[in-house]
Length: 105
Image (cartoon, rainbow, N blue to C red; front, side, top):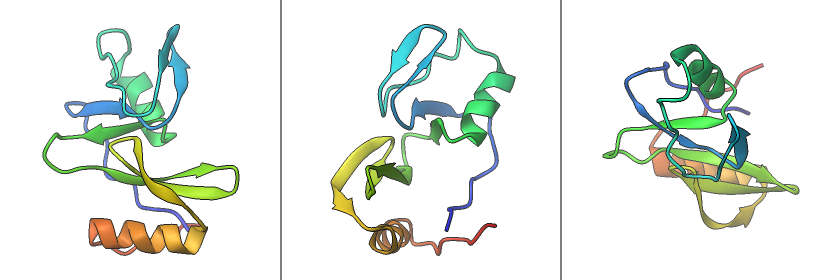
């Protein structure tokens, strides 16, 4: 089960979804992405591959992170709460966002 990805907006602010290296810079979960070093095309690729999250500062972005068989709910790229199994994580995510997950695939 996957969560629907909102349309890409190049004007939005982005944070790292999890740890990764980009252009020689190590980003940790929740770190803001430096827009001066990458193109909009590369940013779109990172967004569509779920390496980064778009944040607006007012509404938090919730997501599910997989780690060694456990699922963690993240808020703006940083873990909140404890690890749980997939159905419980998806139910908690739906509760936090007030939306139902959309099946894909």
